[in-house]
Length: 323
Image (cartoon, one colour):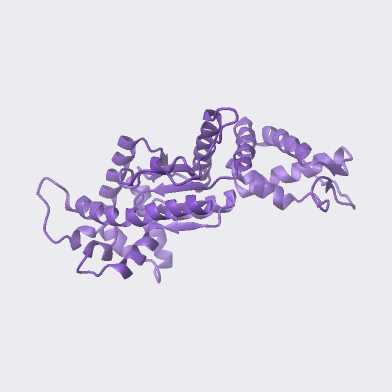
């Protein structure tokens, strides 16, 4: 099919100084619905074709949003069109979005966080391992030995062996997580004070240790846990990392795979007992779409719960301590 050509640009009339329609910009805005970059660009192209076919030379931002919603309904379905509409309401609130993503090593947290940040326009992505590295500079190995191990073998740094009834891998993981969670809570508090959106991901983002509701009045907080229930699929993620063996000690991951699975089981149980959503990781696009659905759902619930004339978000520091 030959695409329509136009010599003069389609101008967005209410944008100073009358900027032209941009497929790239529109595609980036459409990606917040959960659509893949490729399909988002398809929607942007369909919008341009529609405007050219109708002989539109100038359009307002409001009219462009209506066309975008219609094209999303036609190309992707109502779910994505509704996400687009709801996201416009969320961005109008102009409040910090804090997405915290937990999960064991190798479930794809870092990849999801990076892709999610690009689609939502969030420039700050922080890994809990980075916080652990900072804390190493503050506390010596003798003072906090579990900070100097990985999340899945922190039991190797325990000063005393735990009771036989308790799994040592989980005891070590809990001790390390409790320490790192102090830094994670400080990051969320800073985001609330600065009004800056952030995505925090890592194995130390564990329900029960990171009490997100304490920040709910100051930020739009979206907590979740990513899991890979299929054991062989989870194992294959580490095998794939072998291609980058220079920087990824994948053999160490495989040797500690049983502990990694134990940590995942523990994090999953914590999510269930604390009411955190659990997202299954099958494919990147599906996982990101599921997370975006959660973000939109949380945001619309907060908007709808606000009374007319009442501020939706309280940006003053909340009273009370942290767990």
